[in-house]
Amino acid sequence: MSAPTANQNASKWTREKTIKLLDKIEAIATDEFSICDTLSQALIKARCYKQIWSYWKKKWELDEDIMDRIYFIEQIFISKLEDGGLYKTLNASTCHFILKHNYGYNTKGESELPSHLRHEFPELIENKPSNGSKTKKEKEPKPRTEEEIYIQEYINDPAYKDFSPRDTDDEVLAKLRADAAKHPHLYTAKPPLDCNYIKFAEDLFAPNA
Image (cartoon, rainbow, N blue to C red; front, side, top):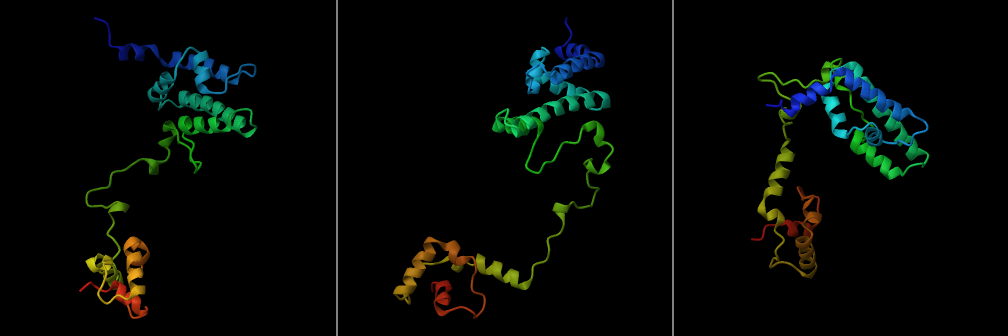
């Protein structure tokens, strides 16, 4: 009975064979006379494919020498794409797409910290909170003031959004109430809480008795 494919693949990509193929890919990437602007193009010329590249990054993620080689080769192609977009020798939109989706470019300019270097920064390692401790999201909410409680209760009152016609409405107030029913967010965002508002506003927000 033949060995499982995973075992065969593991024995195939020894450290020595991986470094040998990385040498070949780096030579292709740095060849000034070779038109090779992306990692995919280099992998094809080396008779390799992207899934193997991902496999190496997983298999050798704690091997500093190999990961340095992998990130250096990726940086060569990042630089090629940046230069291509900057000097317009390549399509800028295509360059941005490849950089964003293959190398994690984002608007904040953040970069991934390689796994083999992350151990130098303990604060980046996710620590589970100890029993009884609270994370930032679990902190007690800030106590609300009496005014905030009153506002919330006012907003939750069914009459707050009741803009149905009143028997006491005149022509102006009827039009205003109709507009309030159509666009309630314009009228309910700041409810009257004291006497500093005009009479029609008092009538507008009054419960429909």
